[in-house]
Length: 346
Ligand SMILES: Cc1ncc(COP(=O)(O)O)c(C=O)c1O
Image 1 (cartoon, rainbow, N blue to C red):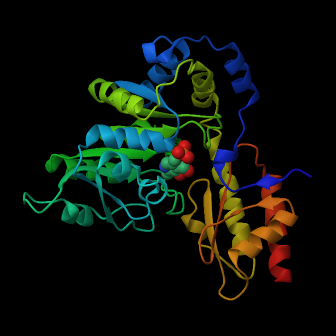
Image 2 (cartoon, rainbow, N blue to C red; image 1 turned 30 degrees about the vertical axis):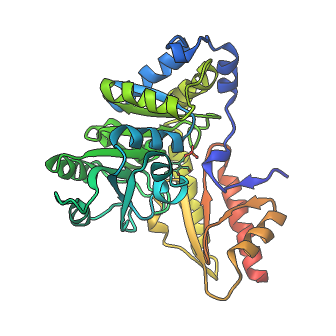
Image 3 (cartoon, rainbow, N blue to C red; image 1 turned 135 degrees about the horizontal axis):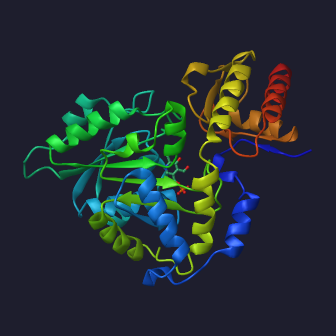
């Protein structure tokens, strides 16, 4: 029996056409700007996002850090959500490496930050304060049920930023999930942000890589920040080749993952002892909780492992499942069955 691994969409393996493209990729030294496949991916990504230029980086974490380092100088401040991936899970890179101060405000359950909270967090001109430079948004919002921020919200946040002379960076690790869920062109979500980073290696199934997009001037500076971080890669076309296939072939099918996530959420809602709001599930991320006193998430994960199902325990009572390429409707039904059996025995 094959394991059904729902811990993350990062466990996806490259598709056969990606493996073929990697094998056949035309290569050169990308630090000299001479890797044709990387250049092709960067042009394609910039075009898809409606930006002038793009830059291949090793990971989503590197993409966000490269952008933050490019927007901010030491001692400047970034406003971001208290449940954002950048704040919670990127090893504090902006402060460790950039001397940049994170100013967190509450994320609402739908992944937004209230505009009045953002405005209230913007520093005035006072010698006691760090200077606000950047606002970071996340779409889809991982910790907030994988919810999709709308273009209207992003545009309002960007307008507020502009009014105060600030820039906006979008952590768009799963931006295509947002566009597919909202049924819009991804450009509508990126039109008014100054920079964004998106991942090739999550739902899009490429083995490695993320892409940063912005103006030509921004990307020229970001290239320097990437070099500082040791991210100047040489024959990077082996990574880019899979990324091109990811953009060409793997975007539209994300709708299947969303459908499977909804099916899983509804299945979970039918199991006694598990708590979920299925209406929150808009994309491929499903969070749910164990009713108090039943069992710990870790124990649930252990019991499910025995049935060849893998989930992630993410809190005192919270668990996460993420649907992705390689997970079928049948796998979802088997997962619901396994969860039901474990909970019945608990
Ligand atoms: C919203 C978000 N941003 C950034 C990242 C970081 O990506 P990576 O693991 O490629 O560094 C992740 C990873 O899961 C993520 O969920």
